[in-house]
Image (tube, rainbow, N blue to C red; front, side, top):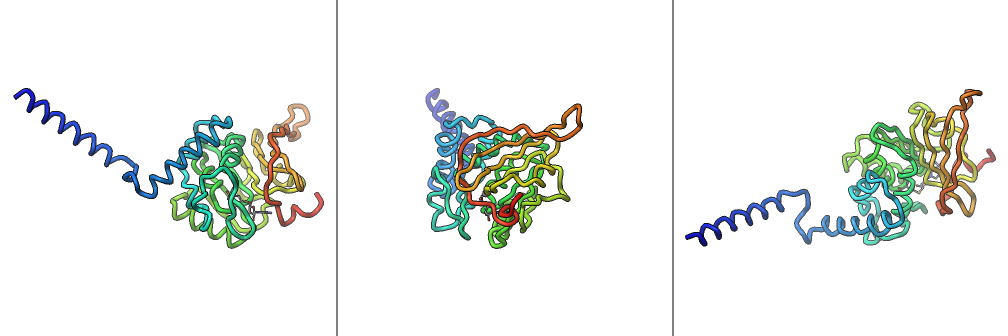
Length: 251
Ligand code: SAH
């Protein structure tokens, strides 16, 4: 009798476990989403955390955003690989590590309002939207801007505004920003972007013609002169697509 009771008890416990497993957020094993998710978690551990990105909010955002949906066919299969990929119109989605590193360097939090120049696929904007209150993003190629905007809306990102145009002059009506991230490389830092930073705000930007450095400009107000001054840090050498539009002109 004791044995039957124990067995019944075990079965109840087991069915409880199975039920709990089925009620989780995860689709059943073998489902496409679950396969992508395994790749995504491996990407975060091996390419991002292993290289020193440590901000838990950034790592979580990278674990959540479905990068494969931002990579058009025929490259989708390689969406979680350790490299940039073509997104059409001669442009690329950045390597996952670079997206994570730039997001960490921005030091944006849940109250932050940030600006991105170079929407591209919309992936970096989605990662920022997981971290910040509001994201403004500008894309110069209309077809890319429209596609990214549509996808971000379908995925339910209602805190991202996408505008089509030249990002060189920023988004003055929405300024000042707590952070600005530029994902195409100008030869010089656009002055309007520095002006649109809030005091304490950070501009993360690749600067240079053929070879570029990822730089961070932090704005502060000098106590004596009351003028804005910028602390500049060089982070790592990088390769981005060039910033087009007004950035091509002399400063
Ligand atoms: N952040 C993107 C990366 C896109 S690559 C992503 O996550 O997918 C850089 C993008 O910057 C390209 O789409 C390019 O068209 C855009 N770009 C280049 N010059 C620009 C400019 N002056 N203003 C706005 N976007 C620009």
